[in-house]
Image (cartoon, rainbow, N blue to C red):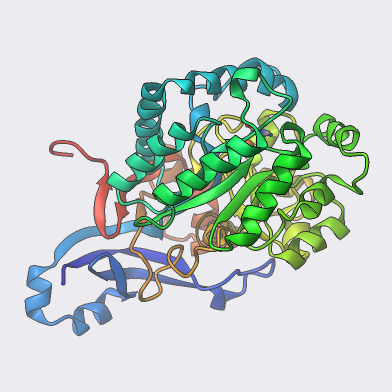
Length: 440
Ligand code: GUN
Ligand code: FE
């Protein structure tokens, strides 16, 4: 086999530390190592112990990466992002529904041209890796070929990625509409072409309740029921005007969540963006069905949508992952996103600890996407996607990181002051994938 040995400060999670920072939920090896064989974790542990277990001939043949004094984490997991909206980031002054009409739909219309999709997909995958993200749940556009463009790039980089064609057959520009029947047929063809090919997974992607007819929601629910190996993603309870609109479009349903429940879209392997304005009963309903929430604080603050209640959602039993929601979100960095997750948690008087925050960005996201048997931790057999962070990438970080600080203090400072400048390298299946290029 092909052996890779990485030395560094290794942190990973075995479970959710919860609001009480359960110390059995994580492992940290201050002078630690990863031993990777053929792209999978063989062992993670103290450097000395890994060294002692490695036969000298194996040690000599192994690729060695020395990241002493750097933090080695499982690759970050972005549970909700729109790749076609890379050029929408930072569009002024609107809330959700106007923002969709003024900026987002025009941007997505350009994806009728395959070369726009191709160029954007290559750009976005490069930026994800530069920000330490190795897996994402990705919205494409209504155009089937926008999924082809994204999966081609992800496949070439051997990334574990989820993506789907947006389904929308009403309440959006004519040129961006499919029909219940064409949306279903296009999804089936894409599933045939891409699902379970290498590390790729297909995600049924009705945009949100207002842009689908009952027929489209019903057809999607039937497909989801017939194919429990697929994922499903959409948006839920993001913005007050959106919620009112859903009420007027679906007067027969008890709530926004009930629209999805009624059409069979709630279940394990479904990921709902935002979930801000939910009652406790709705949170429990989501938890009971296994549906997960994507927590998108940069987007929620940028679009003035509100502050997701992570403590209440996880206490109700919901799975929750962190997400950039680019282009509602303000960038690709899940480190910056974690900083804003902390700010959202403060609004609810339940401050998110660093120990739980880094869980959210790694194993928590993998669990929300039902991929924790493959990624998100360094348990033996997991796929060896990881990122290497420099604790002292900026003067402000360096000033904060003196040797008297505890691990929790340093991780907290990193989550508040850190960003993509901290990312030293991103590895996919044990191979350095970012930065690429000559001599870097
Ligand atoms: N709701 C429906 N579509 C979108 C979208 O593209 N972004 C966000 N943030 N919310 C949505
Ligand atoms: Fe979104």
